[in-house]
Length: 292
Image (cartoon, rainbow, N blue to C red):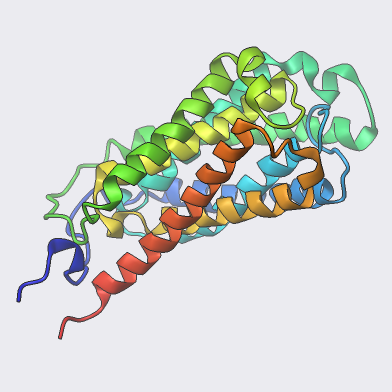
């Protein structure tokens, strides 16, 4: 009996835009920075202390940002092994959202940074480095993306490993949830911050909103690609991010209002990311296995 398309062996992608060196180097540089900075933010958060580029009422906020940075690092390192832009854009489009979004939010709220308000020397220096490095990556991402899209596209064959039909409604709901929450926190932080089940300020809400928006873009981007072979780096980043968030939330569980509706929604959304990543890896491995 002939197998369904989602059960067919995965074939190597044919054609596409060759990945430029600028994009590959950007992904690697951001990955290294994410390991160092994200690891620092997450580690300090686990101790119950607040450390970041701006004052925060709760260590959960910089901790979750650090967890997201750590979680995406493995996927970003995998970008360098890809040959075509189509194989990595489900991760690099969200990366561009994070870099441009965080830099914009930082500039719009520059008066709230330690470098403007003053504070511990390490925090002031960190906020200065945050602006410089984030600005550098932001400009790099814009230029590298523009040059990448100028590369002539080669003809691409049909999808090598299409998503199974049963997964698409769930991915659409998951991606839309993250996209909607992220947009709300980013555009109207003063209103939507009340739905976050722990203490936040305006900068925290918008920074978390940028990451939520990027997760939504990534999940919906994978749905639009409809090809598991084009989501390999993203399949490393999504469950890694969810796992990092879970560790930080568990460590600071006493500071979360778990009885609230938003907390239940957050649990479902994080669990959705873990499930999407795990099922994606399983389906990709199964589709690559030879048929009997």
